[in-house]
Length: 265
Image (cartoon, rainbow, N blue to C red; front, side, top):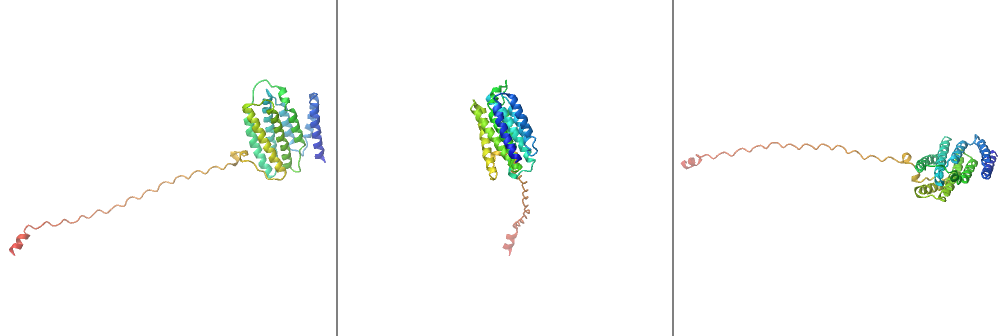
């Protein structure tokens, strides 16, 4: 019953925040305080990291719509990494542990890729507002998500997390993304959509099936066996020495007197 009330409260708070956001920040502050109170639920080890991620995403403002996506997605991915570390400390199922480790590796790499695309200049708050509705919807769904076990709770929260990234990427693609950044947005959207499909399958009880590209070389690659060192060549046997040839005895020289003796006989 407690979990049911928490879910209803989270959904109600999200709706309130969406309505009040149009009228000013004070109402948002009140709702944020209520959400912080929910984060103190001892049965939800993810709540604090979710709140931290939400604040960081809301504070991330770029110089334009695309740079705001980059900054917000960095914080989004950092949240996934932190939640994955938390679940690994909670004795999850083997499949969920494998998913968490893969998430840490993949999101960590993408954070590094996104940081290379950051722009410099004067922040434009209006550009960040484009993502406000998507980010709020994601946060509310994550806070409301729960399961019968810590593994199921993690999966349900990550499902909402990935869906949020897909929606935010759609916003960026619709607001002038071009070149290398557009390629990155499309890559992020595709990978997050694959994660959605994967998590949905795991929630149905299907075993996790991660594509080979989703694993890191450091954790899965088997070092290639070194070629066998060539063995030292065995020394060739010394050629057998031939016994010195025994010289044939010289033929006796003919006796010059032999003929005369025969004639005298």
